[in-house]
Image 1 (tube, rainbow, N blue to C red):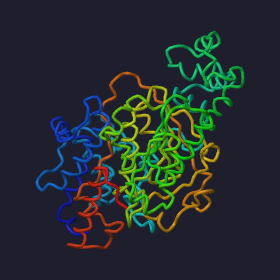
Image 2 (tube, rainbow, N blue to C red; image 1 turned 90 degrees about the vertical axis):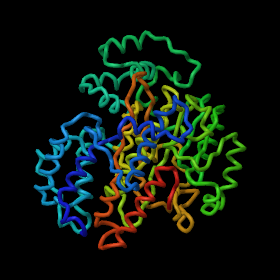
Image 3 (cartoon, helix red, strand yellow; image 1 turned 180 degrees about the vertical axis):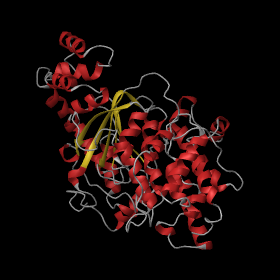
Image 4 (tube, rainbow, N blue to C red; image 1 turned 180 degrees about the horizontal axis):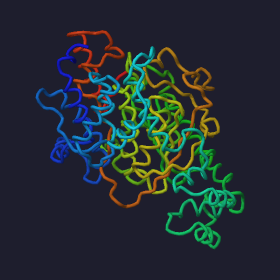
Length: 505
């Protein structure tokens, strides 16, 4: 690759710099210059603006990213030790000049780097299908996921057990509770009392019977509560929002469902694309919008779910949402790159982190969020969904198989220009075969704010323009000189557009 042999030290230096997860405090104020946002909502959009500023800096000649003694976890670390660990790993693998591998390692925490250093792992440099950087990024994700809950179906008791690290005998005790006691235990157990004490309180409580959640109190708890997630028995009085619904078929399904149940809360249906683009892709879109409006729904186009605090249409919705939905999230495909490649995959991880941070101001405490995705997805991995939720005080309550969900029969689409010529079956969804339907899951969360500061949103750093210049994968493979520089610059400009809320593709 051109220009690498002459500067072997720069790759390691940049990896150390990419251990930063933020800019300096003075730059935080700069990120809000020219942005009209209420003081109370700044935290909900700061991460998105910071990401844009980091990318924009790469476009400014002579304005490099500033160093910061930190990493993606926000913990303080010794910069020299961090750099030495990265150096040792790249030297062991004989990848000292691989800028993308250095970028992957630079995004890890010192603890993760040390764990990798103590293992026997090394990327396969002769793999026929994936580059060393892709294999390394895949391994680092799997390393984190081994410490997380599974991406496969998880019932509400298992999610509760994992959250509190409960022993097997306590899990069995909870599984045998009736609906009345189980709902109380799941809502009120906080680790300060023994499980026996909380169960006794549950048995003595006298719940209000006029609300949906308190029906069938003596029925088996697990089976009864699981039906709420599958039948979508949400708060009938609260508004709900659907994000990223390209052809609005899911919002239609939800609106009809709520009307049949007699709900008075509104459905707010949003699309990322503007109305004109939707009309080109979906001939039925205007009819769908009319039906939604007949059901008293609000329909908003051009909504970036990571920046809703900047959208004036959401101005009066703070704390109003009882539920939010985001089905099969994706940051958009980039020609020549697989979704898992580290030069493009950071977009998918940040999408989920910034989505949940943006929701904090709009979901009421106790409100639910559901994100449908394939458990084997390599773009938006399940760990990005669960991790982004947990970082923002959305507890994981259950993972439901998508096909068991009452709302699963809607006309899924690709959500990009492929929909013009490759439309899935809008009625039965039979032609959408990009993923195995049996592996599709609905990840369910509940907003449980602690009331304590949670710090600013950590982000996965994008590759610098220099890293893109030295990448020899995907559409950049084999290019030299001006052709490589032009394509790298075009990719970088696209990234800046995307974090600014403009969809490309």
